[in-house]
Length: 323
Image 1 (cartoon, rainbow, N blue to C red):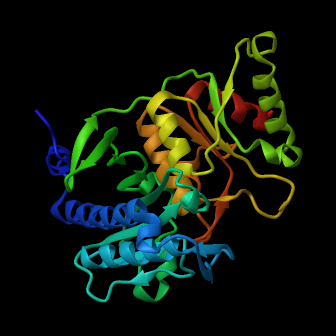
Image 2 (cartoon, helix red, strand yellow):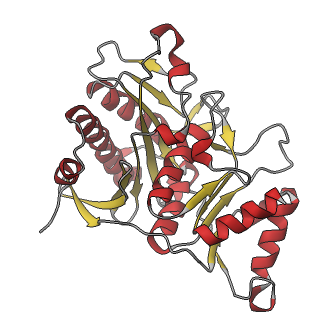
């Protein structure tokens, strides 16, 4: 029997407020999917002419997607909302529940204009009992292990949702405004022959990363004894979706260009939700030294190195860092 998302959430005994929040966020993702699909016909391609809080140039769809999801989270009664595109979180003037929402509204936006898969990532936390309205940002500074739910929506040949509430990772496909369960339990193989990394940055990598990639590139005659294939899409959603679908590793290490930064990806908006999804599918995720979901965030837009995917390989590259 075909299972819709609402049935799946009911089976997991998700509360009505949490179900309502997820449903509203996904209605927002459906709107984003429509804008992505129409592309140039809707006049949404190209630069927005503004920068986000990270100092990055925004695409028109970055701005549109952020506005859509911000409105969706508030409509669903989320207590407060934080976005990769905004400097500070926003308090809902009429909160109906104690959930905190974080999102990357459009991951991989550099790929928008060339029609390559992009996506939306979101994470849901519970507001701490001790939290106060005048210290809003601090409410969000919780380890990833505290996440109630995490998900991404991939806008590709089909629009797919991958979600976890801490009871496994499942995939749904959007059809006629309904999300249908298509993979009840995603499972990342322990071993792999595929990896994803931006090789153009090789000259900036730290020694453990150089060692690991060199060993993979050495193939069957090298120390790992097998040939590896490299894949790189430059959209975290698309790269992680491949890992969750057929195995592999995704790596975005820190490098020497900005030695004061521990990595490129955002802990709260990208690394934590993706790590939750990967772990729930049997994979592993570290910053090279420790489990990402155990990290205590110190600031809202904190960056981190990311190594995630098939457990055997992630343990290997993490061991090289720890040696």
